[in-house]
Length: 213
Length: 386
Image (cartoon, rainbow over all chains, first blue to last red; front, side, top):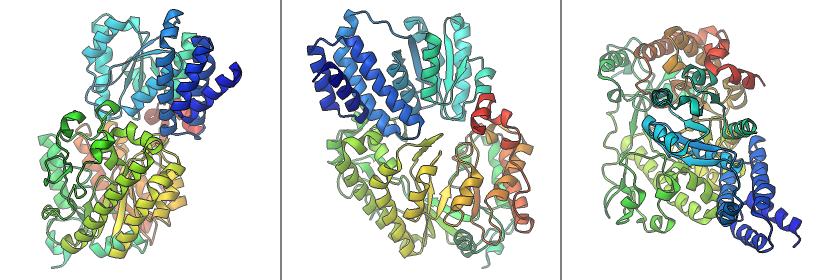
Protein backbone atom coordinates (compact mmCIF):
# COMPACT_ATOMS: atom_id res chain seq x y z
CA UNK A 1 0.00 0.00 0.00
CA UNK A 2 1.24 3.46 -0.77
CA UNK A 3 1.24 6.08 1.95
CA UNK A 4 -1.85 7.69 0.46
CA UNK A 5 -3.64 4.35 0.21
CA UNK A 6 -2.76 3.58 3.80
CA UNK A 7 -4.11 6.91 5.05
CA UNK A 8 -7.24 6.44 2.99
CA UNK A 9 -7.78 2.96 4.42
CA UNK A 10 -7.33 4.27 7.96
CA UNK A 11 -9.89 7.01 7.31
CA UNK A 12 -12.41 4.54 5.91
CA UNK A 13 -11.91 2.04 8.72
CA UNK A 14 -12.24 4.67 11.43
CA UNK A 15 -15.46 5.95 9.89
CA UNK A 16 -16.87 2.42 9.76
CA UNK A 17 -15.55 1.47 13.18
CA UNK A 18 -13.59 -1.52 11.85
CA UNK A 19 -11.21 -1.52 14.77
CA UNK A 20 -9.17 -4.62 13.94
CA UNK A 21 -8.28 -3.47 10.42
CA UNK A 22 -7.86 0.09 11.67
CA UNK A 23 -5.35 -0.90 14.35
CA UNK A 24 -3.40 -3.04 11.93
CA UNK A 25 -3.15 -0.24 9.41
CA UNK A 26 -2.14 2.33 12.02
CA UNK A 27 0.61 -0.01 13.21
CA UNK A 28 1.68 -0.54 9.62
CA UNK A 29 1.76 3.21 9.09
CA UNK A 30 3.98 3.66 12.14
CA UNK A 31 6.32 0.94 10.83
CA UNK A 32 6.42 2.77 7.51
CA UNK A 33 7.61 5.86 9.39
CA UNK A 34 4.52 7.90 8.65
CA UNK A 35 4.74 10.61 11.32
CA UNK A 36 2.22 10.44 14.15
CA UNK A 37 1.24 14.04 13.48
CA UNK A 38 0.31 13.09 9.91
CA UNK A 39 -1.75 10.16 11.12
CA UNK A 40 -3.49 12.40 13.62
CA UNK A 41 -4.19 15.37 11.38
CA UNK A 42 -4.53 13.77 7.95
CA UNK A 43 -6.33 10.58 8.95
CA UNK A 44 -7.88 10.42 12.41
CA UNK A 45 -9.18 13.97 12.61
CA UNK A 46 -10.26 13.99 8.96
CA UNK A 47 -12.26 10.79 9.51
CA UNK A 48 -13.86 12.12 12.68
CA UNK A 49 -14.75 15.33 10.88
CA UNK A 50 -16.44 13.26 8.17
CA UNK A 51 -18.45 11.44 10.82
CA UNK A 52 -19.35 14.74 12.48
CA UNK A 53 -20.46 16.15 9.13
CA UNK A 54 -22.67 13.13 8.53
CA UNK A 55 -24.13 13.52 12.00
CA UNK A 56 -24.89 17.17 11.31
CA UNK A 57 -26.59 16.17 8.07
CA UNK A 58 -28.69 13.50 9.78
CA UNK A 59 -26.84 10.73 7.93
CA UNK A 60 -25.09 9.32 10.98
CA UNK A 61 -26.36 8.83 14.52
CA UNK A 62 -24.91 8.20 17.94
CA UNK A 63 -23.96 4.54 17.36
CA UNK A 64 -21.95 5.54 14.29
CA UNK A 65 -20.23 8.34 16.22
CA UNK A 66 -19.43 6.01 19.10
CA UNK A 67 -18.07 3.24 16.95
CA UNK A 68 -15.82 5.70 15.13
CA UNK A 69 -14.71 7.21 18.43
CA UNK A 70 -13.76 3.74 19.62
CA UNK A 71 -11.26 3.59 16.76
CA UNK A 72 -10.10 7.14 17.42
CA UNK A 73 -9.30 6.31 21.05
CA UNK A 74 -7.50 3.15 20.04
CA UNK A 75 -5.55 5.07 17.40
CA UNK A 76 -4.56 7.77 19.86
CA UNK A 77 -3.25 5.10 22.21
CA UNK A 78 -1.15 3.65 19.40
CA UNK A 79 0.37 6.91 18.24
CA UNK A 80 0.50 8.52 21.70
CA UNK A 81 4.16 7.71 22.42
CA UNK A 82 5.19 9.14 19.04
CA UNK A 83 3.13 12.27 19.59
CA UNK A 84 4.78 12.84 22.94
CA UNK A 85 8.22 12.62 21.31
CA UNK A 86 7.24 15.43 18.97
CA UNK A 87 5.74 17.44 21.78
CA UNK A 88 2.56 18.04 19.82
CA UNK A 89 0.62 20.94 21.24
CA UNK A 90 -3.03 20.54 22.03
CA UNK A 91 -5.59 23.05 20.81
CA UNK A 92 -6.39 23.70 24.42
CA UNK A 93 -7.32 22.05 27.68
CA UNK A 94 -10.95 21.38 28.55
CA UNK A 95 -12.40 20.47 31.92
CA UNK A 96 -15.73 18.79 31.32
CA UNK A 97 -18.49 17.45 33.54
CA UNK A 98 -22.20 16.92 34.10
CA UNK A 99 -23.18 19.18 36.97
CA UNK A 100 -24.16 18.18 40.48
CA UNK A 101 -27.47 16.28 40.90
CA UNK A 102 -27.45 15.21 37.26
CA UNK A 103 -26.35 11.71 36.23
CA UNK A 104 -26.92 11.92 32.48
CA UNK A 105 -23.69 11.55 30.61
CA UNK A 106 -24.16 10.79 26.95
CA UNK A 107 -24.36 14.44 25.89
CA UNK A 108 -21.33 15.26 27.95
CA UNK A 109 -19.46 12.29 26.50
CA UNK A 110 -20.28 13.36 22.95
CA UNK A 111 -18.94 16.83 23.71
CA UNK A 112 -15.75 15.21 24.99
CA UNK A 113 -15.42 13.07 21.88
CA UNK A 114 -15.96 15.95 19.51
CA UNK A 115 -13.48 18.18 21.32
CA UNK A 116 -10.94 15.38 21.39
CA UNK A 117 -11.43 14.88 17.67
CA UNK A 118 -10.57 18.56 17.18
CA UNK A 119 -7.28 18.14 19.01
CA UNK A 120 -8.24 19.36 22.47
CA UNK A 121 -7.08 17.68 25.64
CA UNK A 122 -10.18 16.73 27.59
CA UNK A 123 -10.27 16.20 31.35
CA UNK A 124 -13.60 14.46 31.99
CA UNK A 125 -14.75 14.82 35.60
CA UNK A 126 -17.74 12.54 35.06
CA UNK A 127 -21.29 13.08 36.30
CA UNK A 128 -22.79 14.70 39.41
CA UNK A 129 -19.80 17.04 39.62
CA UNK A 130 -19.97 19.48 42.53
CA UNK A 131 -18.91 23.13 42.07
CA UNK A 132 -15.91 22.62 44.36
CA UNK A 133 -14.75 19.73 42.17
CA UNK A 134 -14.80 22.00 39.11
CA UNK A 135 -12.84 24.61 41.09
CA UNK A 136 -10.29 22.02 42.14
CA UNK A 137 -9.90 20.84 38.55
CA UNK A 138 -9.35 24.39 37.31
CA UNK A 139 -6.60 24.84 39.90
CA UNK A 140 -5.00 21.51 38.97
CA UNK A 141 -5.23 21.52 35.17
CA UNK A 142 -5.40 25.25 34.39
CA UNK A 143 -7.77 24.65 31.49
CA UNK A 144 -8.77 27.07 28.77
CA UNK A 145 -12.42 26.08 29.07
CA UNK A 146 -14.77 24.62 31.63
CA UNK A 147 -17.69 22.84 29.97
CA UNK A 148 -20.77 22.03 32.03
CA UNK A 149 -23.66 19.83 30.94
CA UNK A 150 -27.17 19.32 32.38
CA UNK A 151 -30.20 17.44 31.15
CA UNK A 152 -32.54 18.22 34.01
CA UNK A 153 -34.03 21.63 34.71
CA UNK A 154 -33.65 20.78 38.40
CA UNK A 155 -29.87 20.51 37.87
CA UNK A 156 -29.42 23.80 36.06
CA UNK A 157 -28.91 25.82 39.27
CA UNK A 158 -25.71 23.81 39.79
CA UNK A 159 -24.29 25.57 36.74
CA UNK A 160 -24.87 28.93 38.37
CA UNK A 161 -23.38 27.68 41.62
CA UNK A 162 -20.27 26.53 39.75
CA UNK A 163 -19.84 29.94 38.12
CA UNK A 164 -20.17 31.55 41.55
CA UNK A 165 -17.69 29.09 43.05
CA UNK A 166 -15.14 29.95 40.36
CA UNK A 167 -15.66 33.66 41.09
CA UNK A 168 -15.26 33.07 44.83
CA UNK A 169 -12.05 31.14 44.20
CA UNK A 170 -10.66 34.00 42.10
CA UNK A 171 -10.47 31.75 39.02
CA UNK A 172 -13.33 33.10 36.93
CA UNK A 173 -11.18 35.20 34.62
CA UNK A 174 -8.74 32.40 33.95
CA UNK A 175 -11.22 30.29 32.00
CA UNK A 176 -14.07 30.55 29.56
CA UNK A 177 -17.18 28.78 30.78
CA UNK A 178 -19.36 26.81 28.36
CA UNK A 179 -22.81 25.45 29.20
CA UNK A 180 -25.05 23.07 27.32
CA UNK A 181 -27.68 20.35 27.53
CA UNK A 182 -31.26 19.93 26.44
CA UNK A 183 -32.96 22.55 28.66
CA UNK A 184 -30.11 25.09 28.54
CA UNK A 185 -30.45 28.20 26.38
CA UNK A 186 -28.29 31.15 25.42
CA UNK A 187 -30.50 33.31 27.62
CA UNK A 188 -29.75 31.07 30.59
CA UNK A 189 -26.04 31.10 29.75
CA UNK A 190 -26.04 34.88 29.85
CA UNK A 191 -28.19 35.01 32.95
CA UNK A 192 -25.74 32.96 35.04
CA UNK A 193 -22.66 34.73 33.69
CA UNK A 194 -21.26 31.90 31.61
CA UNK A 195 -19.49 32.69 28.34
CA UNK A 196 -20.50 30.22 25.66
CA UNK A 197 -23.63 28.26 24.81
CA UNK A 198 -24.04 26.00 21.82
CA UNK A 199 -26.95 23.68 21.15
CA UNK A 200 -24.89 20.59 20.36
CA UNK A 201 -21.49 18.95 20.60
CA UNK A 202 -20.43 19.54 17.02
CA UNK A 203 -21.05 23.28 16.98
CA UNK A 204 -19.41 23.69 20.36
CA UNK A 205 -16.28 21.82 19.22
CA UNK A 206 -16.09 23.89 16.05
CA UNK A 207 -16.60 27.13 17.95
CA UNK A 208 -13.85 26.37 20.45
CA UNK A 209 -11.56 25.35 17.61
CA UNK A 210 -12.25 28.66 15.87
CA UNK A 211 -11.58 30.54 19.08
CA UNK A 212 -8.34 28.67 19.68
CA UNK A 213 -6.99 29.67 16.30
CA UNK B 1 -72.73 2.17 40.49
CA UNK B 2 -72.45 4.88 37.81
CA UNK B 3 -68.98 6.34 37.54
CA UNK B 4 -69.98 9.86 38.56
CA UNK B 5 -71.52 8.62 41.81
CA UNK B 6 -68.17 7.15 42.83
CA UNK B 7 -66.60 10.59 42.69
CA UNK B 8 -69.11 12.74 44.60
CA UNK B 9 -66.71 15.68 45.01
CA UNK B 10 -65.71 15.76 41.37
CA UNK B 11 -66.42 18.94 39.45
CA UNK B 12 -65.60 16.98 36.33
CA UNK B 13 -66.58 13.31 36.62
CA UNK B 14 -63.91 11.08 35.12
CA UNK B 15 -64.37 9.64 31.68
CA UNK B 16 -65.30 5.99 31.59
CA UNK B 17 -63.31 3.12 30.20
CA UNK B 18 -65.52 3.11 27.11
CA UNK B 19 -65.06 6.85 26.56
CA UNK B 20 -61.26 6.56 26.72
CA UNK B 21 -61.37 3.61 24.31
CA UNK B 22 -63.50 5.70 21.97
CA UNK B 23 -61.20 8.71 22.31
CA UNK B 24 -58.12 6.63 21.44
CA UNK B 25 -59.81 5.04 18.44
CA UNK B 26 -60.91 8.43 17.16
CA UNK B 27 -64.58 7.75 17.66
CA UNK B 28 -65.19 10.83 19.75
CA UNK B 29 -65.31 11.84 23.40
CA UNK B 30 -66.80 14.58 25.56
CA UNK B 31 -63.48 16.26 26.15
CA UNK B 32 -59.74 15.58 26.15
CA UNK B 33 -58.87 13.13 28.89
CA UNK B 34 -56.51 14.15 31.68
CA UNK B 35 -54.25 11.34 32.85
CA UNK B 36 -51.33 12.48 34.95
CA UNK B 37 -51.65 11.04 38.40
CA UNK B 38 -49.75 7.86 39.10
CA UNK B 39 -47.46 8.20 36.12
CA UNK B 40 -46.11 11.69 35.73
CA UNK B 41 -46.85 13.14 39.13
CA UNK B 42 -46.02 11.40 42.37
CA UNK B 43 -47.28 13.80 44.99
CA UNK B 44 -45.28 12.25 47.81
CA UNK B 45 -42.06 13.15 45.98
CA UNK B 46 -42.89 16.87 46.10
CA UNK B 47 -42.52 19.32 48.98
CA UNK B 48 -44.98 18.69 51.76
CA UNK B 49 -46.77 22.04 51.43
CA UNK B 50 -47.83 20.98 47.93
CA UNK B 51 -49.49 17.73 49.00
CA UNK B 52 -52.83 19.02 50.24
CA UNK B 53 -53.60 21.50 47.45
CA UNK B 54 -52.67 18.94 44.81
CA UNK B 55 -54.60 16.12 46.46
CA UNK B 56 -57.60 18.42 46.84
CA UNK B 57 -57.36 19.32 43.20
CA UNK B 58 -57.17 15.67 42.17
CA UNK B 59 -60.32 15.03 44.19
CA UNK B 60 -62.15 17.81 42.41
CA UNK B 61 -60.74 16.78 39.07
CA UNK B 62 -60.05 13.05 39.22
CA UNK B 63 -57.78 11.29 36.77
CA UNK B 64 -59.59 9.92 33.74
CA UNK B 65 -57.95 6.54 34.17
CA UNK B 66 -56.83 4.22 36.92
CA UNK B 67 -53.12 3.95 36.26
CA UNK B 68 -50.78 1.64 38.13
CA UNK B 69 -47.31 0.16 37.88
CA UNK B 70 -46.87 -3.54 37.57
CA UNK B 71 -44.60 -4.80 40.35
CA UNK B 72 -41.08 -3.60 39.57
CA UNK B 73 -38.26 -6.13 39.83
CA UNK B 74 -35.20 -5.23 41.88
CA UNK B 75 -32.14 -4.76 39.72
CA UNK B 76 -30.12 -7.41 41.55
CA UNK B 77 -31.18 -10.34 43.65
CA UNK B 78 -30.53 -13.95 44.46
CA UNK B 79 -31.77 -16.96 42.51
CA UNK B 80 -35.54 -17.16 42.84
CA UNK B 81 -35.96 -13.49 43.82
CA UNK B 82 -37.96 -11.08 41.69
CA UNK B 83 -35.17 -9.15 39.98
CA UNK B 84 -33.53 -8.39 36.65
CA UNK B 85 -30.20 -10.00 37.44
CA UNK B 86 -29.72 -13.02 39.69
CA UNK B 87 -26.06 -13.67 38.94
CA UNK B 88 -24.06 -13.93 42.13
CA UNK B 89 -21.47 -11.16 42.47
CA UNK B 90 -22.81 -9.14 39.55
CA UNK B 91 -23.99 -6.27 41.74
CA UNK B 92 -20.59 -4.92 42.78
CA UNK B 93 -19.40 -5.01 39.19
CA UNK B 94 -22.09 -2.50 38.29
CA UNK B 95 -21.26 -0.06 41.11
CA UNK B 96 -24.67 1.45 40.92
CA UNK B 97 -26.87 2.68 43.72
CA UNK B 98 -30.32 1.09 44.06
CA UNK B 99 -32.88 2.83 41.89
CA UNK B 100 -30.42 4.46 39.53
CA UNK B 101 -31.01 3.44 35.98
CA UNK B 102 -29.20 6.12 34.03
CA UNK B 103 -25.62 7.21 33.60
CA UNK B 104 -24.16 3.74 33.70
CA UNK B 105 -20.95 4.17 31.84
CA UNK B 106 -18.99 1.58 29.95
CA UNK B 107 -16.62 0.77 32.77
CA UNK B 108 -19.41 -0.03 35.20
CA UNK B 109 -21.71 -1.93 32.86
CA UNK B 110 -22.34 -5.65 33.08
CA UNK B 111 -20.37 -7.81 30.69
CA UNK B 112 -22.34 -9.87 28.24
CA UNK B 113 -21.06 -13.10 29.75
CA UNK B 114 -22.63 -12.04 33.05
CA UNK B 115 -25.89 -11.11 31.34
CA UNK B 116 -25.99 -14.52 29.72
CA UNK B 117 -25.80 -16.20 33.13
CA UNK B 118 -29.07 -14.55 34.21
CA UNK B 119 -31.77 -17.20 34.69
CA UNK B 120 -34.23 -17.54 31.84
CA UNK B 121 -37.22 -16.74 34.05
CA UNK B 122 -35.62 -13.71 35.69
CA UNK B 123 -37.65 -11.60 36.24
CA UNK B 124 -40.42 -14.14 36.66
CA UNK B 125 -43.52 -13.39 34.61
CA UNK B 126 -45.45 -15.82 36.81
CA UNK B 127 -44.70 -13.93 40.03
CA UNK B 128 -47.87 -14.04 42.16
CA UNK B 129 -47.72 -10.39 43.27
CA UNK B 130 -47.27 -8.86 39.85
CA UNK B 131 -50.49 -6.86 40.09
CA UNK B 132 -50.53 -6.14 43.80
CA UNK B 133 -50.83 -2.38 43.22
CA UNK B 134 -53.72 -2.65 40.77
CA UNK B 135 -56.53 -0.39 41.99
CA UNK B 136 -60.08 -1.53 42.62
CA UNK B 137 -62.27 -1.65 39.56
CA UNK B 138 -64.30 1.58 39.32
CA UNK B 139 -65.28 1.82 35.68
CA UNK B 140 -62.27 3.87 34.61
CA UNK B 141 -59.76 2.81 31.98
CA UNK B 142 -57.09 0.66 33.61
CA UNK B 143 -53.62 1.59 32.44
CA UNK B 144 -50.76 -0.61 33.56
CA UNK B 145 -47.15 0.44 33.25
CA UNK B 146 -44.65 -2.17 32.07
CA UNK B 147 -41.37 -0.34 31.88
CA UNK B 148 -38.79 -0.42 30.43
CA UNK B 149 -39.61 -1.69 26.94
CA UNK B 150 -36.63 -3.10 24.98
CA UNK B 151 -33.81 -0.61 24.49
CA UNK B 152 -34.02 0.70 28.05
CA UNK B 153 -34.21 -2.83 29.38
CA UNK B 154 -30.75 -3.34 27.91
CA UNK B 155 -29.63 0.05 29.21
CA UNK B 156 -30.29 -1.23 32.74
CA UNK B 157 -27.50 -3.74 32.25
CA UNK B 158 -25.22 -2.13 29.71
CA UNK B 159 -25.58 1.62 30.06
CA UNK B 160 -26.67 3.85 27.23
CA UNK B 161 -23.40 4.08 25.32
CA UNK B 162 -22.79 0.36 25.32
CA UNK B 163 -26.39 -0.29 24.33
CA UNK B 164 -25.94 1.92 21.29
CA UNK B 165 -22.59 0.36 20.43
CA UNK B 166 -23.83 -3.19 20.94
CA UNK B 167 -26.02 -2.94 17.87
CA UNK B 168 -22.77 -2.97 15.88
CA UNK B 169 -20.59 -5.05 18.16
CA UNK B 170 -22.95 -7.67 19.61
CA UNK B 171 -25.99 -7.85 17.34
CA UNK B 172 -26.89 -11.48 18.11
CA UNK B 173 -26.74 -10.91 21.84
CA UNK B 174 -28.95 -7.82 21.53
CA UNK B 175 -31.56 -9.87 19.68
CA UNK B 176 -31.34 -12.65 22.24
CA UNK B 177 -31.92 -10.17 25.07
CA UNK B 178 -34.85 -8.62 23.20
CA UNK B 179 -36.40 -12.04 22.69
CA UNK B 180 -36.18 -12.71 26.39
CA UNK B 181 -37.78 -9.36 27.15
CA UNK B 182 -40.50 -10.01 24.59
CA UNK B 183 -41.43 -13.27 26.26
CA UNK B 184 -41.76 -11.50 29.62
CA UNK B 185 -43.84 -8.63 28.26
CA UNK B 186 -46.20 -10.91 26.33
CA UNK B 187 -46.87 -13.07 29.34
CA UNK B 188 -47.32 -10.20 31.82
CA UNK B 189 -49.66 -8.50 29.38
CA UNK B 190 -51.80 -11.64 29.10
CA UNK B 191 -51.88 -11.99 32.86
CA UNK B 192 -52.68 -8.29 33.21
CA UNK B 193 -55.79 -8.76 31.13
CA UNK B 194 -56.87 -11.90 32.98
CA UNK B 195 -55.99 -10.87 36.53
CA UNK B 196 -56.10 -7.07 36.59
CA UNK B 197 -58.59 -6.37 33.83
CA UNK B 198 -56.27 -3.88 32.12
CA UNK B 199 -57.28 -1.79 29.13
CA UNK B 200 -53.85 -0.58 28.11
CA UNK B 201 -50.15 -0.75 28.88
CA UNK B 202 -47.56 2.01 28.98
CA UNK B 203 -44.08 1.16 27.80
CA UNK B 204 -40.95 3.29 27.74
CA UNK B 205 -38.00 3.39 25.39
CA UNK B 206 -36.29 6.76 25.19
CA UNK B 207 -35.17 6.59 21.59
CA UNK B 208 -34.92 10.35 21.03
CA UNK B 209 -32.66 13.22 21.99
CA UNK B 210 -33.42 16.91 21.78
CA UNK B 211 -32.51 17.19 18.12
CA UNK B 212 -32.99 13.71 16.71
CA UNK B 213 -33.18 10.01 17.43
CA UNK B 214 -30.36 8.07 19.05
CA UNK B 215 -30.19 5.74 16.08
CA UNK B 216 -31.05 5.53 12.42
CA UNK B 217 -34.35 4.12 11.21
CA UNK B 218 -32.38 1.21 9.73
CA UNK B 219 -30.95 0.21 13.10
CA UNK B 220 -34.28 0.74 14.85
CA UNK B 221 -36.08 -1.40 12.31
CA UNK B 222 -33.51 -4.14 12.64
CA UNK B 223 -33.21 -4.29 16.41
CA UNK B 224 -36.50 -3.03 17.84
CA UNK B 225 -39.34 -2.86 15.32
CA UNK B 226 -39.89 -6.64 15.15
CA UNK B 227 -40.33 -6.84 18.92
CA UNK B 228 -42.53 -3.74 19.12
CA UNK B 229 -44.71 -5.28 16.43
CA UNK B 230 -45.14 -8.53 18.31
CA UNK B 231 -46.14 -6.70 21.50
CA UNK B 232 -48.67 -4.54 19.66
CA UNK B 233 -50.11 -7.47 17.72
CA UNK B 234 -50.65 -9.47 20.89
CA UNK B 235 -52.00 -6.44 22.76
CA UNK B 236 -54.57 -5.87 20.07
CA UNK B 237 -55.53 -9.56 20.08
CA UNK B 238 -56.09 -9.17 23.80
CA UNK B 239 -58.12 -6.02 23.20
CA UNK B 240 -55.78 -3.57 24.91
CA UNK B 241 -53.92 -0.46 23.75
CA UNK B 242 -50.19 0.25 23.75
CA UNK B 243 -49.12 3.65 25.07
CA UNK B 244 -45.53 4.44 24.15
CA UNK B 245 -43.20 6.99 25.74
CA UNK B 246 -40.09 8.46 24.22
CA UNK B 247 -38.61 11.84 24.93
CA UNK B 248 -37.06 13.93 22.22
CA UNK B 249 -37.26 14.32 18.47
CA UNK B 250 -38.29 10.93 17.09
CA UNK B 251 -39.77 12.08 13.78
CA UNK B 252 -37.43 9.80 11.87
CA UNK B 253 -38.74 6.78 13.76
CA UNK B 254 -42.44 7.64 13.89
CA UNK B 255 -43.25 5.72 10.69
CA UNK B 256 -41.80 2.63 12.36
CA UNK B 257 -43.83 3.20 15.51
CA UNK B 258 -46.97 3.50 13.42
CA UNK B 259 -46.01 0.37 11.50
CA UNK B 260 -45.49 -1.44 14.81
CA UNK B 261 -49.04 -0.58 15.82
CA UNK B 262 -48.45 1.81 18.73
CA UNK B 263 -51.80 3.35 19.71
CA UNK B 264 -50.88 6.30 21.91
CA UNK B 265 -47.74 8.44 21.77
CA UNK B 266 -46.26 10.34 24.70
CA UNK B 267 -45.24 13.17 25.02
CA UNK B 268 -44.57 14.84 21.60
CA UNK B 269 -41.88 16.84 23.35
CA UNK B 270 -42.05 20.56 22.87
CA UNK B 271 -39.04 22.27 21.25
CA UNK B 272 -38.12 18.89 19.76
CA UNK B 273 -40.97 18.27 17.34
CA UNK B 274 -43.47 20.64 15.81
CA UNK B 275 -46.81 19.73 17.31
CA UNK B 276 -48.91 20.76 14.32
CA UNK B 277 -46.72 18.83 11.89
CA UNK B 278 -47.02 15.70 14.03
CA UNK B 279 -50.81 15.91 14.27
CA UNK B 280 -51.18 16.60 10.57
CA UNK B 281 -48.94 13.68 9.66
CA UNK B 282 -49.91 11.08 12.23
CA UNK B 283 -53.29 12.25 13.54
CA UNK B 284 -55.09 9.36 11.85
CA UNK B 285 -52.70 6.72 13.14
CA UNK B 286 -51.94 7.79 16.68
CA UNK B 287 -53.65 9.28 19.68
CA UNK B 288 -51.51 11.73 21.63
CA UNK B 289 -50.83 11.71 25.35
CA UNK B 290 -49.71 15.32 25.17
CA UNK B 291 -47.00 16.12 27.64
CA UNK B 292 -46.96 19.65 29.00
CA UNK B 293 -43.46 21.08 28.60
CA UNK B 294 -41.24 20.50 31.60
CA UNK B 295 -38.07 22.01 30.19
CA UNK B 296 -39.09 25.65 30.13
CA UNK B 297 -42.75 26.52 30.48
CA UNK B 298 -43.70 24.54 33.56
CA UNK B 299 -40.75 25.47 35.77
CA UNK B 300 -40.11 28.99 34.47
CA UNK B 301 -43.43 30.25 33.06
CA UNK B 302 -46.13 32.11 34.93
CA UNK B 303 -49.75 31.09 35.42
CA UNK B 304 -50.93 32.91 32.31
CA UNK B 305 -48.24 31.20 30.22
CA UNK B 306 -49.38 27.87 31.61
CA UNK B 307 -53.06 28.48 30.89
CA UNK B 308 -52.30 29.67 27.36
CA UNK B 309 -50.13 26.66 26.63
CA UNK B 310 -52.82 24.34 28.00
CA UNK B 311 -55.32 25.83 25.56
CA UNK B 312 -52.77 25.61 22.76
CA UNK B 313 -52.34 21.89 23.34
CA UNK B 314 -56.06 21.22 23.03
CA UNK B 315 -56.38 23.53 20.03
CA UNK B 316 -53.55 21.65 18.36
CA UNK B 317 -54.11 18.02 19.29
CA UNK B 318 -57.84 17.68 19.83
CA UNK B 319 -59.60 16.39 16.74
CA UNK B 320 -63.25 17.45 16.75
CA UNK B 321 -65.68 14.52 16.76
CA UNK B 322 -62.72 12.15 17.04
CA UNK B 323 -60.78 12.98 20.16
CA UNK B 324 -57.33 11.36 20.13
CA UNK B 325 -55.95 13.67 22.79
CA UNK B 326 -55.09 13.13 26.43
CA UNK B 327 -53.49 15.78 28.63
CA UNK B 328 -50.47 14.97 30.76
CA UNK B 329 -46.92 16.15 31.54
CA UNK B 330 -43.92 15.46 29.35
CA UNK B 331 -42.09 13.63 32.11
CA UNK B 332 -42.20 13.14 35.85
CA UNK B 333 -42.79 16.50 37.46
CA UNK B 334 -40.04 17.84 39.72
CA UNK B 335 -40.20 20.06 42.73
CA UNK B 336 -38.97 23.05 40.75
CA UNK B 337 -42.39 23.47 39.13
CA UNK B 338 -44.30 26.11 41.09
CA UNK B 339 -47.42 24.78 42.75
CA UNK B 340 -49.61 27.43 41.15
CA UNK B 341 -48.41 26.35 37.69
CA UNK B 342 -49.45 22.75 38.21
CA UNK B 343 -52.83 23.78 39.62
CA UNK B 344 -53.39 26.18 36.71
CA UNK B 345 -52.55 23.49 34.18
CA UNK B 346 -54.96 20.92 35.58
CA UNK B 347 -57.78 23.42 36.09
CA UNK B 348 -57.39 24.81 32.59
CA UNK B 349 -57.14 21.33 31.07
CA UNK B 350 -60.55 20.42 32.46
CA UNK B 351 -62.14 23.86 32.03
CA UNK B 352 -60.97 24.53 28.50
CA UNK B 353 -61.07 20.88 27.54
CA UNK B 354 -64.75 20.77 28.38
CA UNK B 355 -65.41 23.52 25.84
CA UNK B 356 -63.10 22.46 23.05
CA UNK B 357 -65.53 20.24 21.19
CA UNK B 358 -67.70 23.32 20.60
CA UNK B 359 -64.86 25.74 19.83
CA UNK B 360 -62.99 24.16 16.96
CA UNK B 361 -59.25 24.31 16.56
CA UNK B 362 -56.53 26.88 16.23
CA UNK B 363 -57.75 29.84 18.24
CA UNK B 364 -54.81 30.16 20.58
CA UNK B 365 -51.09 30.40 20.08
CA UNK B 366 -48.59 28.81 22.40
CA UNK B 367 -46.73 31.39 24.49
CA UNK B 368 -43.60 29.52 23.55
CA UNK B 369 -44.15 30.56 19.95
CA UNK B 370 -45.56 33.99 20.71
CA UNK B 371 -42.48 34.98 22.71
CA UNK B 372 -39.67 33.02 21.17
CA UNK B 373 -36.91 35.14 22.61
CA UNK B 374 -38.06 34.34 26.11
CA UNK B 375 -38.41 30.62 25.62
CA UNK B 376 -35.78 29.72 23.09
CA UNK B 377 -33.00 32.20 23.80
CA UNK B 378 -31.82 34.63 21.16
CA UNK B 379 -29.69 32.36 18.98
CA UNK B 380 -32.01 29.42 19.23
CA UNK B 381 -34.80 31.57 17.83
CA UNK B 382 -32.78 32.10 14.69
CA UNK B 383 -31.99 28.41 14.42
CA UNK B 384 -35.62 27.52 14.91
CA UNK B 385 -36.70 29.86 12.13
CA UNK B 386 -34.23 28.34 9.75
